[in-house]
Length: 187
Image 1 (cartoon, rainbow, N blue to C red):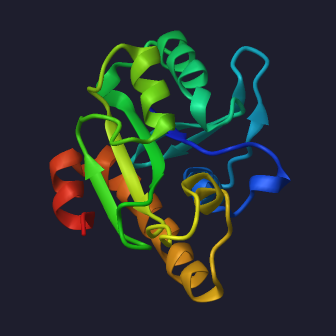
Image 2: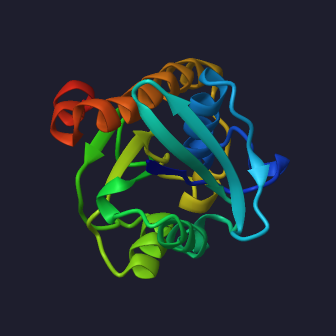
């Protein structure tokens, strides 16, 4: 089993914003396999389990807000007895072009507060991360306002396609391995 944590902010106010593409990928994985998210009483998040021929995924959408995502991810990983190598964290990335995907086996937070929280809670950078490009911020816009904003219609079409490809990429990590997925989906 793999834990796939799509990071974002809970609530309708943040739905379909740049910062919530991690939630969108988790939702897409659940939709494809008719899985439903349920609020957990043990962990601060919503969980859904996907069983497929290719493997099993436990999908997590933390309800802690982005900056405290690690307080949801770490206890689920430990309680389920999963290794760090069986964790995929999905986040937005303002340094990548809108719709780009970047998979890494390990690494730093790159300034992303959700990743900083997960790294701090796990005490390690040794987990797979999938970054989905949401486009850089305009020079006259504050970063917080940028990531909490929605997409322009032409960007939304690109992101919707990227969310579907990111869901494919997660299955590729599980089925084919991280190296294969990086070679196929990074770009």
